[in-house]
Amino acid sequence: MTDPSAPASPLPGATAALVLADGTVFWGRGLGAAVTRVGEVCFNTSMSGYQEILTDPSYAGQIITFTFPHIGNVGANPNDLESTTPASLGCVLRADVTDPSNYRSQRHLDDWLKSVDLPGIAGVDTRRLTRRIRDLGAPSGALCHAPDGAIDVAALQKLAAEWPGLEGMDLAKEVSCSQTYIWTETLWDFADDGRSDGFGTLAEPKFHVVAVDYGAKRNILRNLASQGCRVTVVPASATADEILGHKPDGVFLANGPGDPAATGVYAVPELRRLIDSGVPMFGICLGHQMLALALGAKTEKMHMGHRGANHPVKDLETGKVEITSQNHGFVVAEGSLPSGVTVTHRSLFDGTVEGLKVDGKPVFSVQYHPEASPGPMDSHYLFARFRELMERNA
Image 1 (cartoon, rainbow, N blue to C red):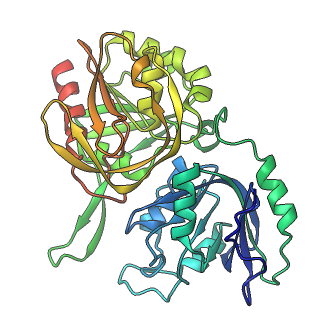
Image 2 (image 1 turned 90 degrees about the vertical axis):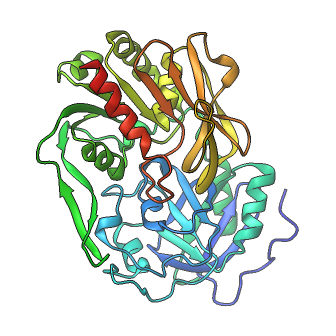
């Protein structure tokens, strides 16, 4: 059913449109690449870090609505990329992108979007779109940027209606690395005057971690390196024998996109062998969900997901509340967790599982993003916890 509040005709000078599967149309001004993309429309409430968000591989298959209106005002630069090629499909903005005003900026956001073939639409009532997602769930949508204004709404609605949705999609294999590589870059360092300096390099590693790349963000790998870990990154399809063949002190399960049950078809049997090996393991986001599946639990699609940098999570073991950065549309079904698995963290928004550990084994995971890129740094302690597990297991 078409949204009765949707504009009946294009806005004056409209060069872009977002058309949902139910026929709802959002007109606006195009930016970025002049292309059409079809996927799930979601929203992110973060007030900063739009470039990190757009390049987070976990957004594969999704068009991102930014609820914060000032997107693009600090420009773009290569240091804020979380992956070389964005897996997200496009962005929806409230306000037009202004000229950048930041000493780290190297190019305009519009120019960067063009360079990576991402379309965008500005001038949209993002509050209305966000409420629609909140009330009815994340819809399928088609985003078209046509500089000449020639937009076929009926064709776009057909594309959106025929898009199959994220359930059943194994997107990890599309964003994972194809070859094993070594990572030694550490977190950003700041000069004495507080201005940016650069990323560091791990000189004397104390541990060797194998990271299974389901869609790993660069800043996660930097956090591991900053804990003294030389990181060997392997594809999502790596077997337990291949992973253990690197003789790791620990195994890290990275974030990533898509339906965890679909990725689990090939990943779960290998993860079960890794759990049985006794090697310390730490999972984040999709890695958390994959670990839960390997332990015998189930995952399920959420109504609208968690995406933003302001999500309160309670550590049930310490009683502390941390403000977290999140990006996920699937969640571990708590009732499916087997005995011997303890819930360690819980969302204070909706009570969903945000962390777990395996009793008697050096294995734990969290649903959120402790690397904070973007977001608060309340959860950086989890990387130190992983290091401590490796120290005790040595």
